[in-house]
Length: 479
Picture 1 (cartoon, rainbow, N blue to C red):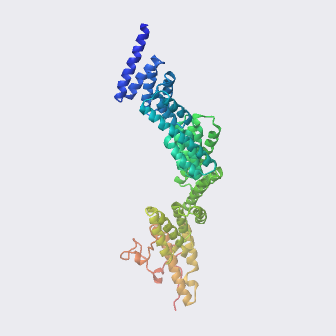
Picture 2 (tube, helix red, strand yellow):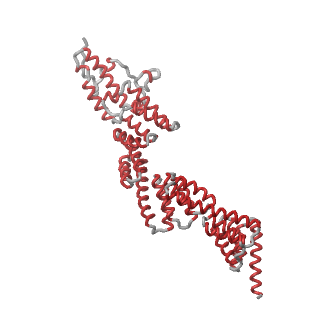
Picture 3 (cartoon, one colour):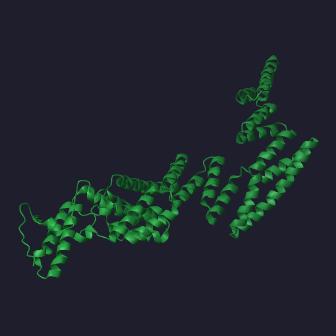
């Protein structure tokens, strides 16, 4: 008998100390004493009730519910515990069980406040049950907008109901509000242990949105819970493969290996042909690579295809504008940069690109040294010199006898020599590519061209041999 008294004394001490610590807000220490009380006497309903109170104060309703159930089993007329359990069950959406608790409270000689609370919650249970029936009817009739509104109301009361959150997520998916669907599904993963289905669905939504990295993260969470989950493992392999290809392609772009990057993005389109986002993303990056690789015609074609679906894509507009510049379509380049600027006025690349395109357009209406020699803007020095020699030989004034033709040839010859001077000098060519004519007096300061002096008269070329070094070999006859 003494042992029993000693045991009861220990339990009471733990309960008393725990109560004081709870009042002082020292929840962890209070919980420790209530754990000890339960361990000492598993039949002590008050030990369970006190521990449930701490769990609720800590926001751990899942842990509180079993303790409240233990209280009700040990002391069925403990109305306070039954009322609290009913409230938790209502929040979990277990409407029938909650209703049963509230009815039993009313039959257990409750206090006036407990009776009022129980009656209020019974009415709430009835309302929720009626609304739930309506919601399922609207959902089955595919009226997802109405069903969503009703689910909003249900979840104001049944805040911890996993099924309702998953149902609302499905409504959001049908309505195309995928961000909201993800939010509900993430809540469902926290409310229900081992919720592999929710992780799988979140991953597939991210995948369809084009966020392959987030999709990969979520599917890994599914496999942590169940490494043998068939759906999750199959999806994981697909996402991992696609993610690896995209990351590899971007690394190649960073290394300026544009041809290899194009090939890698073509593989991306083959890996995932059924999700439009990845096809368009791949084509957008191929457009960028072609433009950077100075494949103007191919870049314009691919960029235009992307812009048909996404006409305000600033990155693609910039890439196509650069391709137009390479292809000497200056009006089109200006137009693309202006469209890009309408979408993003603060982009410094757009501002710089537009100014450059406008300069080149203005320049194209004057002398174009590339056109004079018949070479592309990306021509190498060796190619420029070869073209120059060919043009100089063709237009040398000694080849013409008619006075008018000779004068025309002299001017043409001077332009050819000017083009060669500008395009074989790195600094002068850079200025020309930026839209300035380094031989235009308007662009010079005090007539000085950074050490280059060019005089536009035929006589200035006498004594110059465009085909080699040494003295000038041609003789000119002037009548």
